[in-house]
Length: 114
Length: 115
Image (cartoon, rainbow over all chains, first blue to last red; front, side):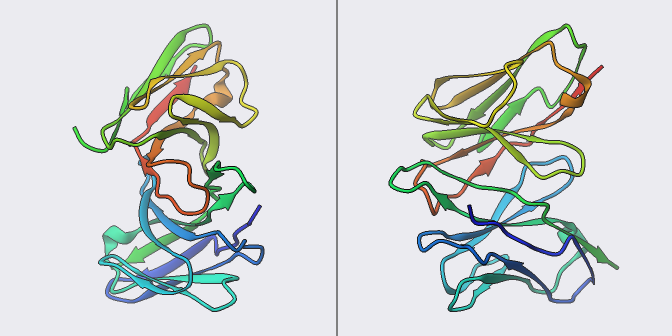
């Protein structure tokens, strides 16, 4: 199973760019990298997903180097409302079967200060 | 209603009670999930259903009993719970179970307190 490692917590200030890096040394060929955001007492929300190079949407960018052993979530100009837990996940394929599952780690608690 | 809804949002029950959590998805998805999130712990996957068939049970105690009558509804029946079962219970759905790339949509969760 691909395991992910990310910082437990990060602090930032409003208006700054935040980069959260995740390590996934055992990522499999067919695995995608997905990031979720979770506010207290709410379910996680999908932010972005990628396989390689760079992906950008209206919320964030995801940078994935060629070896795919890590990825970086970039949040441009954060605001107080971006204070949340951010999870890096690697999709797991079970061999020839179609059952995949997401394994959530501890996540990174981002605190945005005024 | 859109997305994934869960009821009730909050539940307090005694250890001898029987209660049920309900999840409904309005996305036309084929897979549904139950997760447990205890305080300061990662989300733990409990059950996975695909097309109303249970495909995964992650060693969950029998006091938790899931039911999926159709692809839009998922229940979690609770009986004789323990105080350590107090947690946020989250339901999620996804289009299907294609292994490597799929997005899960989560409901708001049910905050369960066992007294």
